[in-house]
Amino acid sequence: MQSENTLSPTEGLSTLGIQDYAVAHDQNSPDELIRQTLSRGLGDLADNGALMIRTGAFTGRAPKDRFIVKDDLTADTINWNEINLPFSEKGFDQLYRRITRYFKGREVWVRDGSACADPSCRIHIRMVTETPWANLFCYNMFLRPAPGTPPPLPDWTVIHAPGCRAIPEIHGTRQENFTLIHLTKKILIIGGSGYTGEIKKGIFSFLNYWLPLRKGVLGMHCSANIGRGGDTAIFFGLSGTGKTTLSTDPDRRLIGDDEHGWNASGIFNFEGGCYAKCIDLQQEKEPEIYQAIRSGALLENTRFYPGTRTVNYSDVSITENTRVSYPLYHLDGVQDPPMGPAPRHIFFLCCDAHGVLPPIARLSREQAMFQFLSGYTAKVAGTEMGITEPRSTFSSCYGAPFLPLHPMRYARMLGDRLTAARSRCWLVNTGWTGGCFGTGKRMPLPCTRAMIRAALEGKLEKESFASTGIFRLQVPSACPGVTPELLDPRISWQDKEAYDQKEKSLAESYLKNFRKFENKVDPSVLSALPELV
Image (tube, rainbow, N blue to C red):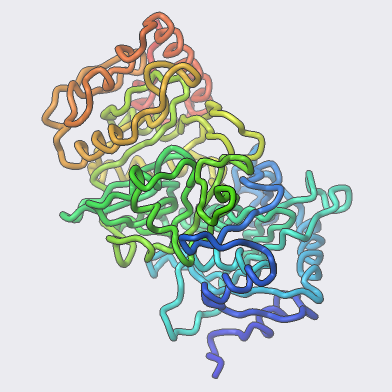
């Protein structure tokens, strides 16, 4: 019997304007979705049980083709810029009709899920996909209804149709692919691109608009875990800086690997799964993620070793942005429900391609605000189309592509929470040491893990700290399991003059980027800016 709080697939699709489809597959299990993908020749099964698919021409996000509808609600609230691109209501309506009519005579897969583990902030989402494997991604990544519980009426709708392409000269898009967010109608439509990350980040962008304005919740591009003593830690960082890897710790319970909210009650996960990069994945280095890739996991754009069904995680012939999605229950030691108290420790992860920032440094509140607004890192190859090697960038709040509001709104919320929770903040460089990209080497993962563990256990606080370099960062004199030479980046460089030049160059880039905030931040934050002689 259909619950009065739900719609059948036929009723729901008709309400959306999707009619005359061949068949609707509703809430299929992961096993069913895998069988459907294989029987239609849309994927392959790896020997570890994971489903392997290809997302087509797009193997990363296309930020220049992602738009937000500009209307009475959003005209004066969105921070319109080169990231938050406006789109007309008329243009959206045209593309919405096009994508709904696209399903005529085709199969369609329907999935209901939710976002936000905190019930007071939860939204319900109906996801309509052209392929069974995209529906599997939605199953993995969003919160799933309890078994036997009919899903409630959706608040939001997502339609994903890689085969539906826009006509730029008619629809006003830049290219044939498009991602459109209509915040008033609560609809996300994606066409021309099979990359599933567009689904995930589209909903994240909505939450970063709705939660601060309606609920007073800080949305964060971060991972989070919790220790045996109930101490929460969060890890900010852009894709490729180590959020998933470093928060997946066998000695701590994972809350989530990418998207969280912080309210008066503490931290809560937005999602029900993980979306991890798997380039060069090795069981010895990342056993938890490696073991999570099993039946039900979805591998994107990976390849097999020739003549086998064994995944070659080092193969970058399709993209360096190889990905895997899996539900949180694929991991051992997951926090249930995925929530925790206000964080005791906050780590800002950056991938410093210059190789001049220390592997770990303690930050004052002012330095933390400066680093948060700066959001320095290097974009890692493959995360976005056209990125083939690390490229220095500044992404406000470590998530500018997903922040519809002005960065200062999120920064002020973070500052208020830092004061209230008395959280300790750290800057962690997961990039290069001993030289810049091309001459130095990538920071050893075991050393990064050792430094974070020492911070979490309070061992670093027992060491002496010294202010170093132009950035005046507080660097510990020693750390268990880490050679002292690694802690001081200048010492790790053979050519000290080259280091000094790179450090100055990076500081100048920081200052240039920060000019847009100088007249908006608290004057005390300006004291944290790097000092050039």
